[in-house]
Image (cartoon, helix red, strand yellow):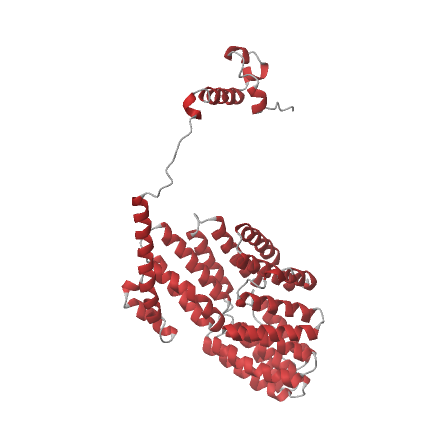
Length: 444
C-alpha cells in the first residue's frame, strides 16, 4: 500500500502568496486536513508579522525589584536559621550509641525539620565508611524525619534523597534486597525530579544490581548515569558512575577492560575527593592482582589503605587490607597473610559486616591448611558461627551450615583445599540468593 506524504512547511509557504481558494485547487491540499491546518497557521503567523508593533523594541529595566529581593533574602535567612538550629539538633541526636537515637528523636518533635534531614544526609558518608550498622540506623531515622515534614515539593525531594542514602547504607551490610526496596521508595518520591536527580537513583540501582549479579543491567545503568553526569559537569558523580561500570566488568572477569576504564580516570584524580581517589586505587589494585601483576597490586593496595586510613574510612580500609592479604597468599607469604586475616576478622565483626566475616573465615581456613594447621580450623569456624548467631544475620541458615561443614570436616581430618573453595563459591552465591542452603554432605 502506498502512503501519501504530507507537505512540509517550506512547500506550504509557497501557497502564502496565492488567494485562499486557489490553494484548495491543489489536489493534495483539497483532501488533506492536516496540511490545511498547517497552512492556516502559517497564514496567521504571516499576518501577525505585518503589524508594526511586533517589530517595536521593548526596553526592560535591569534594576532588581525590591519585593523580589526581600522575598529571596527572607527565604535565605530562613534556611540559614534552620540549618544553624539543625547543626545543634543533629549533634545532640547522634550523641551516644545508635540504640539511643530513635528514642531521643521521639522526645524532640522540634527536631523534625528539613534542615535536620539535610544535615543527617551530609553525615551519612562518614558512617557508611566507618560503621555500617550505624549508617543503616542513621539513614532510617533520616527517612522517618523526611516523611514527617509538611507536604511540599521540597519534602518529596528530601524523602527521595533519604531513601537513596538508606539503600546505599544497606549495601554495606549485604542487605541487597532491602536496598532495592528502599530505592523503589526513593524513585516513587522522585517522580517529578530533574534528570540529574534521576541519574543519581539510576547509579544507585546500577550498584545494587551489580551486587545482585545482574551485570548487563548494571553496566547499562552505570553508563547512562555517567553520560548524564558528564553533561551536567559533575566530575565526582561521573567518576563514581565509571567506577561502577568498571566494577561490573571486573565481576565478569573482564579485567583488562575494567582497568582501562579506571585508567581513563587519571585526568580527574587531582580534583576528586580523597574517598573517590581511594576507591579508584583500590579497584585498580584488584585488576592488577587478577591480571597477575602482584607487585603493582600490592603497591596500589598499600596506597589505597593509607588513603582510607587518612580519611577515617574503616570499612573500606579493612576491605583493602583484606585484598592485600589475598595478594600475600598468592605470593607465598602465608604467615603474614594469616596475621592480617586474624585482625580483619575481628574488625569486620565489630563493624557488623557479616559477609566479610564469613569470607575471611574461609580465607583463614585455606591459609591454615596450607600451613598444615588444620586443627585450628574448627575453632575458627565456631567463632564465625557464634558471630552469625549473635547478629541474627538474614543469610545465617546457609552460612551457618557451610561453616559447620568446614568445622566438622576439619575436626575429622578430611578437610581439603577443594572443600574450602566450594564453601567460598557458596558464599559468592549467597550474596544474591540469601535463602540458599548449603547442601554438601560430610565425608564418611
